[in-house]
Length: 51
Image (cartoon, rainbow, N blue to C red; front, side, top):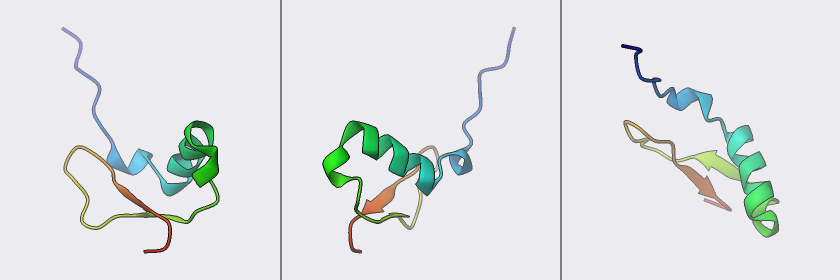
């Protein structure tokens, strides 16, 4: 039986989040994006705009 894929939270970088945001919500694409603290166990969270 094949193993399920594993989640690597570090693979979701601020650069990737910014590119995804530019495609889905271009009106927010110019805002700064930084990783939120603390992070979750199985997800990534980012702060958008001036923090």
